[in-house]
Image 1: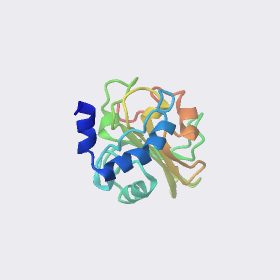
Image 2 (image 1 turned 60 degrees about the vertical axis):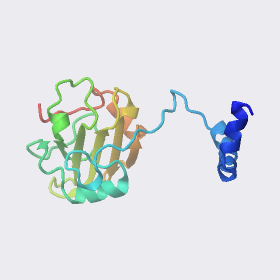
Image 3 (image 1 turned 45 degrees about the vertical axis):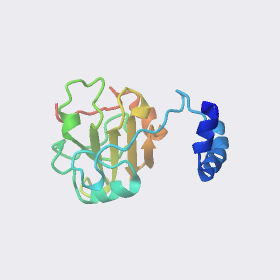
Length: 178
């Protein structure tokens, strides 16, 4: 019996059927450098005080728990700085972003939370979040989220965020911890 035939004998029928059923899916999908696989989630979910979760449901819980309250932050709420489309805001940075020695390529796990305020500068109306999820200096290196205010976003490389942030250094406009 050949080596190939021996392998065929060892394969259970149920597995062979699964492989055959999955073959068209694998054959139809393609991965290229233009469409990289999404990064693995980083952080430990809704209880990690340094890395916000990267999905809207968990992030809403994380934000409501105020886990970013101990981060480095701007001293006061201010009007949006040009070219920002955001409302009045105050920016918070986690330890990784605040202490980064290389502002041209932030480390994976660097994160910022922007509290968005109504025009009275005292009523929080939303949040904007960015988390570096993979190394590199491309839009696909960052997860963006915004709820409330002028934009809505939830995803890695979110176009509505990446388009503007591309003009910043490694997609970050403001550093409050340095």
